Amino acid sequence: MSVSLLKNKVVDLSKKAKIEIDKLPLSNTSAQVVLVLDISKSMNRLYKNGVVQNLVQRILGLAMNLDDDGCIDVILFGTRAYNIKSATIDNLDGYVDREITSKYRIVEATRYSEALNVIKDKYQNAKGDPAFVVFVTDGNNSDKRDTTNLITELSHSPIFFQFVGIGQETFPYLNKLDDLPGRFIDNAGFMKVEDIDSLDDHQLYSGLLNEFPDWIKEAKRKGLI
Image 1 (cartoon, rainbow, N blue to C red):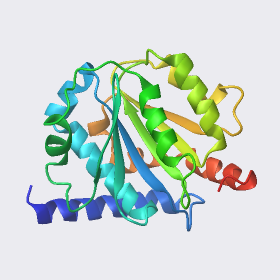
Image 2 (cartoon, helix red, strand yellow; image 1 turned 120 degrees about the horizontal axis):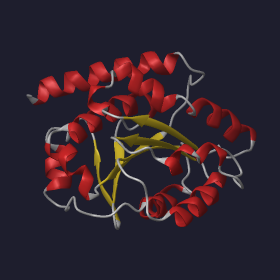
Image 3 (cartoon, rainbow, N blue to C red; image 1 turned 180 degrees about the horizontal axis):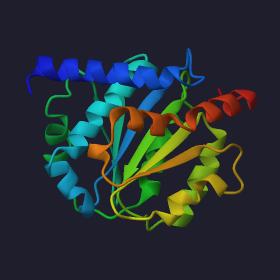
Image 4 (cartoon, rainbow, N blue to C red; image 1 turned 180 degrees about the vertical axis):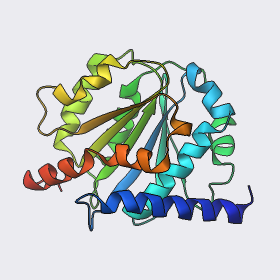
């Protein structure tokens, strides 16, 4: 796809995202959009066949509505986490090949807490817009205690996590996030998608945004934003 066609595609995606945003009480809502990507071994096929590149494009379409700078911060995680170059409409062409698969091995374990620590360091005390984190994984984590502790701690911060489980896993841990006790505010949502590449754009955006308005309302009430 040429650069001009790619830009037109993202603009079209942004229009679809706006339709879903306008259905929700999110008028005048701004957020720093953050995309967290699993680089564990089982994700290798999704990087090679373009699914992850397509997902970056679709999240960028969402960011063009929520994020003042029109870009998405990108964090990779496996055994460790990596804060990499942000994705924009200008560097989107070949982004995954250039910034991810050519620099990082897609063979690591699945430790959610590694990414959460990067998010904590970067956004916990950030001024300005809250962070809307789209956290994509295809596997269950091996660090449930650390993850639970961090999500609980970060419930006092202007950060909302939208976890997205893709593939065949049942994700018992992520399914229980809504009932996680001890949090200042419910700061996490979860959606399960078996084949994210075949999911309609409107359905994707609707699912990602489903719990965000409730968090915005409660975060304002409790003085987080």
